[in-house]
Length: 337
Image (tube, rainbow, N blue to C red; front, side, top):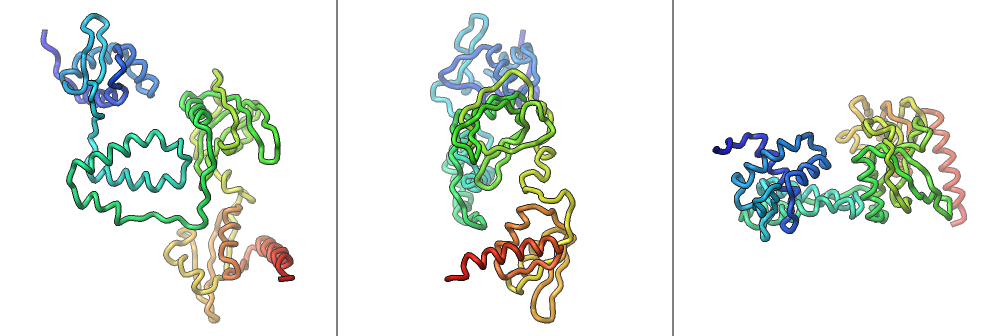
């Protein structure tokens, strides 16, 4: 009886199966099915068995049937090279994206991307696409402000956190708070990870208090154990959990901000406005007045303080008074110099 021709879906699944297999590891259809389920595929064992009857013929140089007695077992050839459908343009894009992420994320969190980066390098080496190979040397990403080194995160901590989030589970942790000398144990309901600046945060809640959303830096976790219970945030979108949280929001409502910039300090806001509703006017004495409705958070304060004496807070009155107090305190620190 002849084999049925492969369907498009079978071929697509074939590429996924190739990505799961290793040269020195033999797998049965049942083992492959288990790995696909772990990766989040919704597929039956029977479908995998049918696929594995077809895939050695579709990819004859990439899948070996090494045991013809049932159940069949499969592995990659010993000198197999990972399949890539990556073209030179995609390879360059991946390299540039990797370069952008390196300063932002902990080293361990980039490990899963490393094989794809090596594949991108191989594609460019073999493609002889000279223009593509040179493009990386023509693009440079620079970051505003002082760039601190990312905090060190233990690889087991990161791995267990990923596992808990993947399976939607709770975790038992040993966590060292900023102002404590000894870690304490907690049961947490993780909702997701946020990479903010050079710091990675777990966003979630303590056991028994699901409405109080917290964010905890991963580098302060000393131990993580994944539990069997499901997290109350299992099906929640991290964007909803973090709304206003990591900006250290001061006021739940937006404020009508009015700033007075020196001409040269504020001109960039013509090109990169605070929002679509921003308004800028020039004054007779050469200053720029900027008005907009903005979120009242600490990020706003950090941003304004970055301009030093090149900016003045005009409104709202409460924020102006806050900056007046800061100015007096700073002046006091330096008045004897």
